[in-house]
Length: 294
Picture: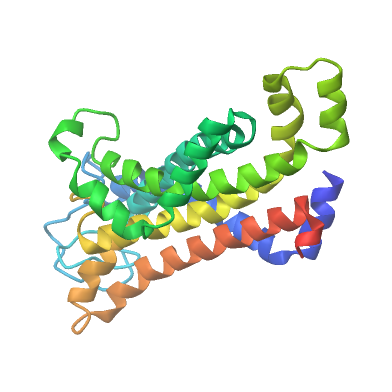
């Protein structure tokens, strides 16, 4: 704890980024419901839209609508909060899947039989030949959305699957390099000489050494995933209506930018702040666990 407090004094950007992310999680968790209750005291389950037929398009900022309304009379702050919920959900689920797959393949690339490790690593290298966004577009296009309608998070599942497939190769390559270095360290060789199994070596001696760097990389990867999800939604092939996404909000605001440019500010601002904050936290964690990286 003392080390963490001392580090936060040296890195104010880490503190600002972490504070913003905590507030964003709270905003995403409770914001849509609170705003829905404020606008519709009688109750309205459709907090993704928060549509008020009394309000016109692009209601002025202030009063009941803190950030105004969009072109359909929907409360902007409610949709930003619901979009934050979706973006964070996609980001964290994709990163968990990428970590499980990437760590597994990275470890197998070092400890598996040579024929298997060669196949796995060559397949990993081949994944880098495809641009991430283009590969994600191709994968989403091959997934029939109707087959996932009844699955939990079914409307988000095509995006989650596509981004998970494109996210794990970089983690696998990183883990493979780190594990190849750690397996020749004295404490690993000593444990192996005492009769420890490969599974014990990996889970008790090697992977704990990677916790810090994987946590730091995960923050930066989540930022990239949220940006990729917003890009797909901006193109109209990501999160589909009525669920709001920052990317789809930016696209809608862009179409009416000539008559109401302020609508473009809010989703762009929250997306930029989120990406910056995740990168600040990731860089701070990397410096905390690896001072040589400064």
